[in-house]
Length: 276
Image (cartoon, rainbow, N blue to C red; front, side, top):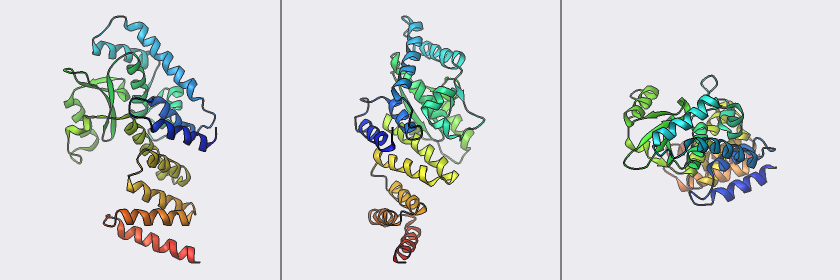
């Protein structure tokens, strides 16, 4: 499977409305650009089989916390899924195929696995994009609680979630109840890509970072900073004309941006290079 075909399939999938595509399929298509021979349907069938095992054990159980307990026992105790605390920034933690094979990942990819299983057994849960840590939320009223797949499906109250944030950031990040609101599956894919982008930029892997930014712009073409970053990455890779177009477009749409002066300097340098 070549990249252009994978990208076409990803584009078709994300153009569907929320709820009309399968989150795991989107996550696997993200991975397929890195793993061209990845069999998306085979991994979806594996997730289906896992959900069938959980479903067979639930019987007539309707208590949501008991259903969560069954999912946790199967996923974490029997299957051995766990948060990768030894090598958190390994890119394999962001690729769903690797998470399923290695049974380890970061909060968002473990949450994708959890969402797949829980949704198939009828548990109404959604993703929650809290700063620095992804969770899932049981949303049926009047009972609302949060689940942390990175820590073996631990059930959390709102106060527990606030403590999670404090443990990570201290007083640097003020609490907001909006942190615990549900996000769409599109937003989950977007955050997965942001994680990958951050790792690739840190590693200086401009080509892979550019491919991530291109997919982010498929999801959210209105995010001007991604147009800027596409231009900066293209400049690093020697695509100077394309870089100049993006950076000029960024300034046209956002002339008062905080980094406008710096981007102007980049544009000037690119023009000089092209004139030579």
